[in-house]
Image 1 (cartoon, one colour):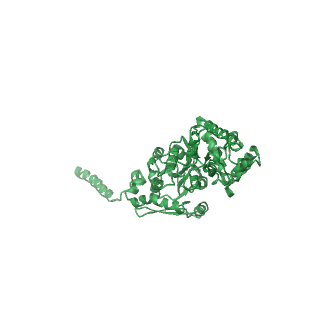
Image 2 (image 1 turned 135 degrees about the horizontal axis):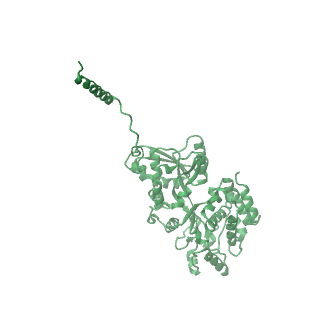
Image 3 (image 1 turned 60 degrees about the vertical axis):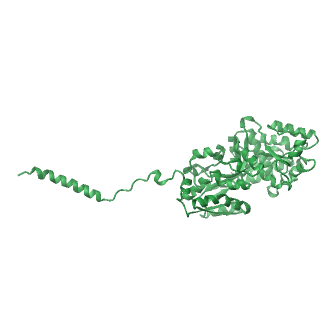
Length: 450
């Protein structure tokens, strides 16, 4: 006889048995979530102790006193996080970094004072794109956009953010003998035209305004390239400047020749430069500002980066015996640009503790101790002008932080054959009168790698 109760019991038992067997099976792994694998901030994770007892290797050009100051600047971070940043400096950094990277022994992080060298490694796909883990919006809050633009470089699969800026220097400065300058009744020019008027006023008073020298051994001519870069930033667009340093805008172009002509209005006028054209070429760049401090001064104005004070006579007091002003703008549509140099930290090995150190370098705190001890300028908006121990560093920092735009030294971005070769030589030949402007520009272009 058909049993209805047994009919319903059997499938129920099978269902229960299936549930029991199912429960005994190992669960499939859960798909990792973003929160599980990526901290919102590697720096915060580091301060929480997540990377304690890890090691991050670094190399760069800091040696001697600079190496000591760098180690001191990162000491508090190491103590707070337990990450050991092992820095090894080299005076032959450009050579040793290439050997290490090519030999598969790249450091975790390297400090590049020449972005052009870093760009070579980026093209070869050796450098980590830091935008893959850094919050770009936070970077925009803490840097002038120009610093972020200059960090973008072309890799094998497209453009990447090749690193972050930590310590910088300003070049767009004109130095003058303050005490004598004030006594003479001269005033600080705010525009290029006013600077030319001051130059003529000093000539009318029987003196030459400018102290200029470009002799520097095998590097003779580099101060002339700085002037060209300054004027390019003030007479054409940032896009044209960027194309110029990559070779897309040739030296023979109207824009570059115009910059040379603006420079020539001062440099090639015998009434404006101490020693004239011959003196420019034969005078060592470090000696060129010294006549400013004769009594009375033999020249009154000297354009150079903030490092030049180390060449001034001993015993001079900043703000009393000498001071500086921002090299004025030329065309108002290009604002107030600043020519800079600096240190870009780039990453070769991708681990969480390395990411944390890179994020640390995006903060003013990473260079605060160095700023306070002198010799460093911070590009970070979260740094304080109160950190600076002297008026010179503080004034340079203020100029950089308030700049409408910044661009790196162009010759340092160009291939070595040009930036440290034909550009130096071509400008020297032109200033000395050996060749005319057209020939000099053509010879510089001819050295560009094909």
